[in-house]
Image 1 (tube, protein in one colour):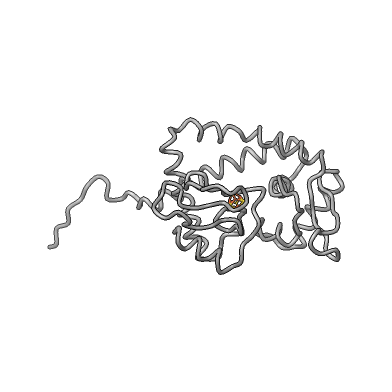
Image 2 (tube, helix red, strand yellow):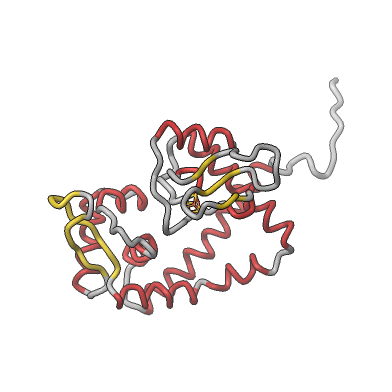
Length: 217
Ligand code: SF4
């Protein structure tokens, strides 16, 4: 008879599985906080998410982009947007880069509501801020690496991240503490300062984007 050694920890899920469970739990808490806020403001969760996605988007966004980010059909995104326009939180106008297309922006009322939403969800930011700086940096880099892996599966919607930005110059200073460079602000970019949602981001071409994310993974 084959004898196998057993330890009390044999049934422990892999670290990778526990990472994903932990991320899912954090996401659930954030989602619950957002739903609570949305309900109090007479919004449904999709409408609240659209308002968050429009935050800091000075150039306006297309409906198709919103639908991709929300993983819903364009028709469903259109219904949510129409409700937000009626509430005076979102405005539609001609897109800056194509006068035949329409784009969406937050109104001043919408911006104020998004600010209140950020404050209502500030408990999560406060919790992260209480971690020591080294742990924060390790987690940030780890999450970037996880997103880089997910990008390979093409399941991850586009981000306004440095690695997808046309101003990002990868490894301009190899081996230094700040190996990358932002051509917009003309400054070296340490890994700890990489943005995941930058208001000034402009998408780079798909080949460069893929190369940046694959180099980071
Ligand atoms: S900081 Fe903003 S503008 Fe600069 S590379 Fe990153 S995303 Fe682009």
